Amino acid sequence: MAVFLFINVNHDVGHESSESIPISLGYIAAALKETGSKAIILDDLRDNPLSLKNVEKWIRRLTPSVVGFTAYQSTMHRIRFLCRYIKSRHERVLTMLGGPQILAMPSQGLQELCDVDILVRGDGEAIAQQIAEVLDKGQGLDLVDGITFRKNEAVIDTRPWPLPDDDLDRYPSPYLNNTINLRGKDTAILLSSRGCRHVCRFCITPRLCGGRVRYNSVQRVVEEMDYLTKSGIKRFWFADPNFTDDPERTSVLLREKMRRGIHTPFWCQTRSDLVNGDMLRLLKEAGADTIAFGLESGSPSVLKKTGKGIELDHLRDNIVTAKSLEMDTELFSIFGLPGETVEDARKTMEFLRSLEIPIESNSGSQQMQLYFGSVFERGPEAFGISPEKIYRPAYLSVGEQYETAEMTSADLVKVRNLWALANAQLETDVYYKQRTFEILQFLLENRKDLEEEPSFHAFGALASAAIEEYTLLDKFLE
Image (cartoon, rainbow, N blue to C red; front, side, top):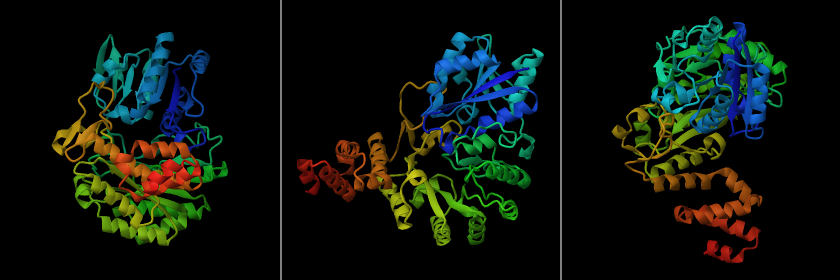
């Protein structure tokens, strides 16, 4: 019987964060258990990093056939380190990577990942089941669809993963079969659907899902919510790319949640053109305390170049309605988009401020990333994007290492600093005299980028006064 050991690498958050829940690995482990294989998930988190001693202990205890990881650009170095250790001590253990970084990675990447054996290029649940089956039968990995693997130093791509049917209930719930440990958490991630039928040029999801949306049944999702609520979970975080993609199904799901007496509040995200006043009112009634929308840019010309296909006025109307219902609203935005200037970035900030949405958490902008599979990543030059001419291994995408026709690297740094200065948490820390030295260092190091902003001088003066640095205080007051 094949044994799988999965390692959940996430050094961005601690164990209490819902973002540390290994939902993808949980689905795969649940599917393996259903077919008789053994699967265990270990955490490797910011406040509880996995030591090599513990890796060794679990490998000796389980003698796994495969050690697997969900890979992101940000976790690749840590994953490579762990794979290097595992292969150096346990050569016969297969190391396997899946996830967003892997699905569209060029096969050449495996040639440079010397300590990785398998790249998973489709539904991890079904592919892991196939791998378990061939290992149990002593057969070759070339019989498994949808993978890239190493064979006698050669890199082999097997047949492409066939598009499965739309019914996600074919994969067991990692919650209902008790695969995921939620100890210490009060929020749980839920997925009621996968995929997106829209083609935003900066996003990798359209390539990964083939422009399709697949759903779990309403009954399955409600059963998960009921189980989690009875297990002590206080809030749900629906990670569907567009929770309201199918308005009729969404309506049935929300009404069934209420009919079953599940009062647990939840967070969800969607596109502004997939909701209206009636849907927002139903979401609120069913317990949605926060709704997040993709804004991307407050500049209409920049927004148009993303291919997102939304209108700012319509988005504004939906936010006003949501706020009138006392729902918190969040806006995802990106800077460094093709066509964007520093002044365009200011327009995005002003769009948030005009709607009184705090610039913090999800509403704090991030630089666009050129990840494997996005339209912009596949042909950056056509959009005025110039990747930095530096050595980059084939398993890493460009990420944020680029310039655009409108912004140099220095401009991108300036916009990042402007967003940091505008962050509501920084203002809170200034007024409550927290992180004072850190804030002063940030202001002084980035004075050239920030000195045109009134808040630069106000925050600098307050921070200087807090530590009685009167020479600095005079400079900021000037």
